[in-house]
Length: 260
Image 1 (spheres, helix red, strand yellow):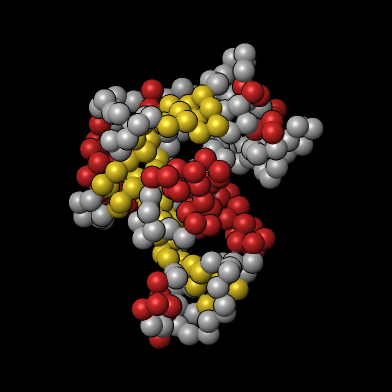
Image 2 (tube, one colour):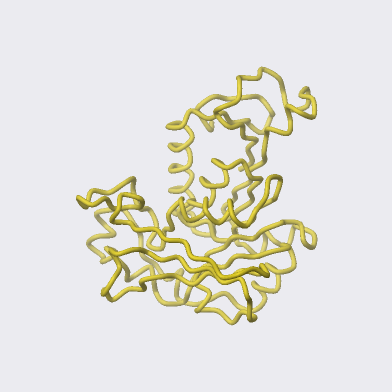
């Protein structure tokens, strides 16, 4: 599904994209999200087409069946499906293709993959809520950037993530390995620049899509699982409606607060 987007702080424009001058068109950005295999998606693009690939591939640890609050009973209550999508890691062909179509890469869960040495590692500290538990207290993100190592602190018990201090949920978790939108916003703010084209090969819950939309990046992504694809479509639509942003339909007519 392809959309042209306009941030909500701009005035309403009643022109088609093709009628706008260069300054007006500069405010708009492109978003393409499809329900397909990532290898098929990447095959359509030339070498180094994307400035940044920001991806979270399967870790091969069965995350669909275990995790924080992801027991079978908890998943049913939250309408989170299980499955075997995390039964194995992507093969070498995936990473070869990822590096072919993108100039730089940030890869979540990097300790599960065979990646080359890098200087620019990133640590996502998951906060005090994860201390002393049987789950990772931080996540290792590999990056291709020749920079000093960076730390992103995000305490979910401080009202920043899925859970507030009183344990009430902020929004609905729709995927077992769902990442916070704030993580993706921090990554895009610090590792991408205006005008960059962003790729996500495993869209999952759609947090990266929402972050790219809010920050105004061209964004291309795919999700293989039809149920997760539909869930993130719903989540994204609700986000757009809640924030009152503007969207373009594929025929280049402007539509307000609705994707359809």
